[in-house]
Length: 250
Image (cartoon, rainbow, N blue to C red; front, side, top):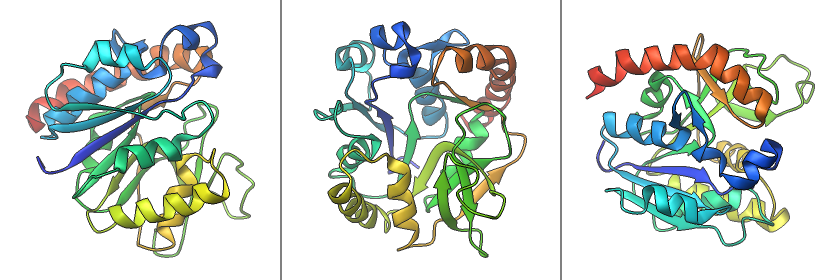
C-alpha cells in the first residue's frame, strides 16, 4: 500500500475544547499518553502507508514542530482555515494527489481495524454501531449499502440510521478527481461547508459503500467531556487492540 496517500484533516479551530483548544490543536492533544495524530501515524506506518499529508490551519507552528522533520510526512496549510470548513482542508489535501488515498480526521482515537478496513485501495466509508458518545454524525445507506446521507440530526430521515461516522474514509484512485470536482461545486455554494457533504456529493457520482464495524473501539474528541469519556471507556480498548493488531500488520 506504499502508493496510497493518507490525508489527515487538522486545520480546525478546536473551539469546543475551550482553553485547551486555544492553546493546542485538537490532533496534538494527548489521549492515553500520546497525541491523536501520532497514534494515527503509527497505525498508518504499521499498515505500510508511508506518505502522509497533514492539513494544518489553527496553530500550524505546533504541527510543524511536532512533525516537520518526520520522514514521509508533508505539512500543507489551509490559509483560509478561519473562515472555511473541513471540505476546504480536504481540497487542499487532495491537491496534486494521484492514486488512492485515505482520509482521517485528526481528533480520533480508534482501534486499527477501522483503518485496516479502509485500506482496500477502493472507495469506502467506515461506520460504527451506536456509541452514545454525543455529537454523533449519523449515516443512512441505500438498498445496496452505499452512502445516501449524513447528518447530526437523527431525525433527518424517517428511517433509522445505518450507523455512525467514524471519520476514516478510503477513496479509490478513480474517485479522487471526482471528489475534487464535487468538493469544488459544494464549496461554490457554501464556502464554509464541512467535508461530510462532499462525501455525500461524491456518493451521487460513484459507489461509496459503508462498512459498519460493530463493537469498534473508537472516539472523537470535540470537548472536555468527550475527552474524559474517551480516557475512561475507550482508551483501554484501543490500546489493547493496537497491541494485538499492529504487530500483526507489521
